[in-house]
Image (cartoon, rainbow, N blue to C red; front, top):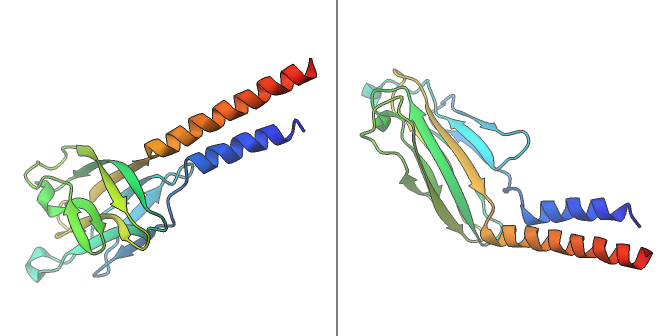
Amino acid sequence: MKSILPVAIIVNIFAASPALAAFSLANDNGGDGSVVVDPFDDRYFVILGADNAPDINSGFTNVTTYGTQATTARVINVRWSHITSDVTANWDPGGWFLNGNSFQLTDDNIPGNVLQGGAFQIAVNPGDRWGFYVSSSDSFGGRGILTIATVPEPASWAMLIAGFGLTGATLRRRRAVAA
């Protein structure tokens, strides 16, 4: 019976802080953009925009996206930061998208090598296609780098705390029965 308790704790932790749905990486126009996902927690990742976009005079851009399709209705709390080596951030803007609509997070007028950041929420419904992007319109100054950290919703934290409370109550009850 004692061996069940650690399993219950582990199950409670994973149920309370669900991982994000499987994301997929895409580059249009043959870009070399990539993503680096934290090996211990897939809610933390870095999107590296393309650094081989066609020359600005050709009129093409390379958009690197990292997105998924929502399976449940939920609110995703997001913290983000962005930096680029270009002269200004307008050459490698970063943002998020929902069902084909893009929402730029970065300020185009911020000089290069200056970290931008903030926090916001995305509300998704089942079937919504959402994610994050870095758009690269040149290949002269380097990549735009967008770092994302999605944090559990307040309901997840409440479930986690309630689970630990139940685990503690179970332990206390077992000690009383054993005495």
